[in-house]
Length: 162
Image (cartoon, rainbow, N blue to C red):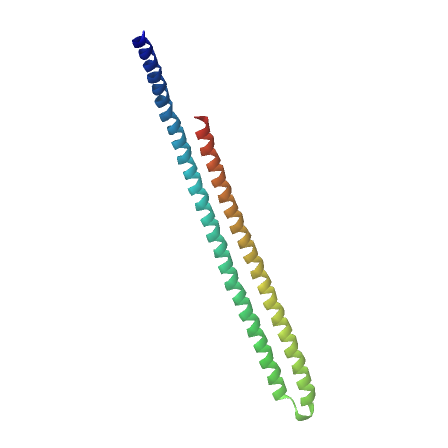
């Protein structure tokens, strides 16, 4: 009788052990597949984030170059207006010189104002581009984090099923 009970108990343990090892590879393979998919999704999201950041940086660099060009152009226009005003003062008759100086100062002030406005507008466009680029980068980073969280959740779901 003892041998019969011992055999039954040993058989019970053997079938239980066999049942556990049979499901474990299936569970592991599902988890491994989920992890591989998760890793692929994360890499894809990170690549997209890098691409978005590169595009944003390129836009900012172009905007900086354009702003510098506009500022240089505005400065050149102001310098030209200054030179013209000084030239007119030099050509003016001695009795009209005071009037010419006053007119030249007015033209110089107008040229400076115009140049300042152009420079401010260039800076405004540049700043807007920089803010947009920062927003694009932040959005891309948030999307990458979302992809990581979803991938982790998928792995946990796969592990919980088995």
